[in-house]
Amino acid sequence: MAAAQREVWTDVQLQRLLAEKAGLELSSASVSALFTKQPSQLKLSTLIALCSALDGTLNDLFDVDTTSGAQPCPA
Image 1 (cartoon, rainbow, N blue to C red):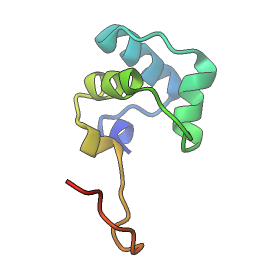
Image 2: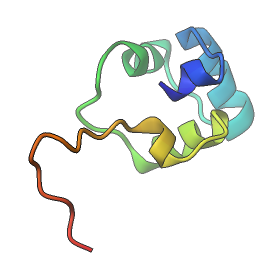
Image 3: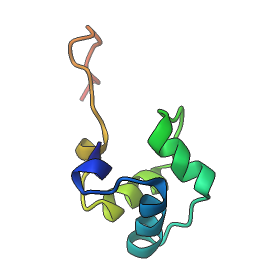
């Protein structure tokens, strides 16, 4: 996970980074859910904040399985 690569090991650390670096205040429960399960939906503003807080890109946040036989998105 992008957080671990940047030595962010707890939801409290991520919550602090989101507030300090991206100006996003998420509840403890919301941040904990990002660590413990795959969310069924996520706001674009939260994705952008995660990228900012973790000094990464969207590609750093996603692990796409290309072997599942799924068709690529049309360009």
